Amino acid sequence: MALTEIQKKILAEVADLHKVPVGAYNFRINGATESRNTTANIDIRSKADGSGIDIHIMPGTKNESVHIPVVLSESGLKETVYNNFYIGEGADVTIVAGCGIDNCGNQDSQHDGVHRFYVEKGAKVRYVEKHYGSGDGEGKRILNPVTEVYMEEGSHMEMEMAQIKGVDSTERSTIAELKKDASLVVRERLMTHGHQSALSVYKVSLLEEGANADVVSRSVARDDSKQKFDACVAGFAPCKGHTECDSIIMDNGTILAVPSLEARHVDAALVHEAAIGKIAGEQLIKLMTLGLTEHEAEEEIINGFLA
Image 1 (cartoon, rainbow, N blue to C red):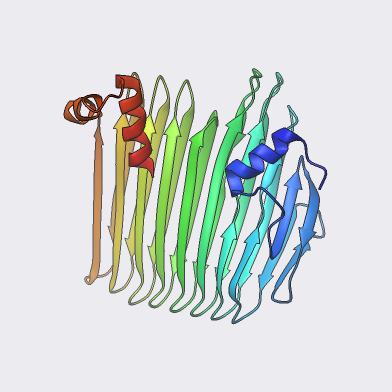
Image 2: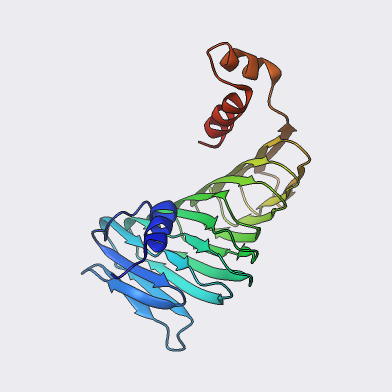
């Protein structure tokens, strides 16, 4: 692929890619497919209307991965992309997504990605999604991901959602529906600074017996940034659900945590937790006695918290 140095840097940030990966991949650069590869077990097809791709993973596929990073490096570019994932029965795969925007111009750049996952019986998926922004232009970097997850009996999905730097505005919406003995684990890591804003909304429905979900968000709000975490776990059968928000507030930041539970069955066991606070003074003092400045100590604590 003929990529600029900025595009290469973004790919490294959002997908940990320093070279073309082994296996299936689809690289979307500035609104168009730059490169694609399929395998015997994983097929990637463009939608007929050009609005996104369909990824088909054959039943029983093991130890394979799919990389579908998106890069925007042109100011003023705005797009909405629809990607559907069909994970066959008994498959065990890793899917690495993510979007990076470098905006050095005066116009806003925006990527809205809608991902729908259809996880068949007994399949296992590890899904990694990272968002990153860079560039010194006055135009904003806007990312609005929508994720829908439909899980069949005995399936398992782990979602790692990270946004640590440079995104001016984001609205993340995630819904999930779990059938018998399906399990979902979500780990969100988020940091905002400056005048950035971030909204995370989760609605997880545990539809059948044995379904379970664990949704945890860790976040840091710095400067004048604003965050809202709104997560609901609903139990419609004998099931287990947990949602948690753990946040550090700094400077003039604002954080609103709204964890909620919806029990529709007498044997739905549901728990929610929320904690917001500043960095403890004793933590800073301990690190400063080891030779770190106050700023260095803060950074070490934040890095550890978001790890």
